Length: 191
Image (tube, rainbow, N blue to C red; front, side, top):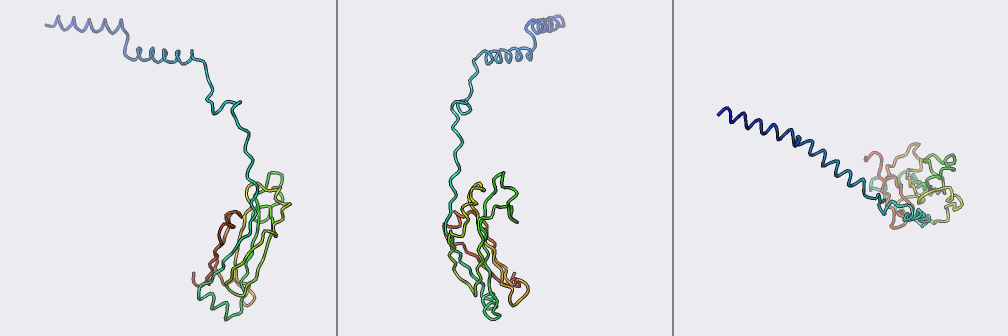
């Protein structure tokens, strides 16, 4: 029986030596696959071929629109403004992201300033801002859509410090012009 076992091992060993190990077969198969791919002509995908590329699209022109602001006060803020005689200041800044050659001409927000409006109100009000305030000559120094920032504070005529906490608004002018911009204010002491 030992002779049969030794014979079986000898046969298996001989077969392994003649045919090679399993990894050798895998390598040969992988090399054969590589040769097949290498022999095929190379083609560029159609999306990256030079002759199929479209020229870069021009960005859309700047959209300049009027903006409506609805300024509201909490009941406590409305009462304080009315009783004290304090005013409300709404400051609007129009700007645009600078092109490379205009980087040195930016304002405190790193934007090319297109215009600025300051309104002083006695209480809650709806304000319509015309697009006439925008300096259209400055648009050539910007890239992308013009932006609008709206900052609201108390007028600081009665009190030396701001007494209102109001939402700050910053978005593109085209989006701000789609619907009224709601700015809600309350007393800082209500926060």
